[in-house]
Image 1 (cartoon, rainbow, N blue to C red):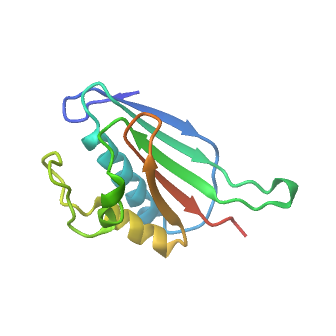
Image 2 (tube, rainbow, N blue to C red; image 1 turned 90 degrees about the vertical axis):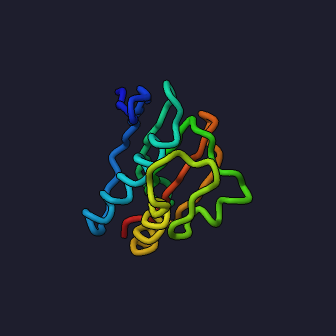
Length: 138
């Protein structure tokens, strides 16, 4: 699927396993919307944003978390800046115009309310990988 991405023709890839859980539907929708919006905004023309869910597994006695991943082919966030990326109103120097610096702060707040962990890493596409691991369903 292609999205306009501000006129930049960004490809959006969706890889969805069925993942079920409980939580505040609107808050979780906001979490996903913020992650995808940030990824599209920071991805250059012709780039790729990949959204993937993986369901938690109960196989072989393991109870693994459900996982949401959003990866992009943008510039990423340097390791030294990743902790600050969750601060309200934080925007890295040279960030594209638009946005308030609240996206990842909101994602972190929603994740915390749901007992989920948010990790920032390097995407295979070359940009940022944001992983949200939700606690296993009871």
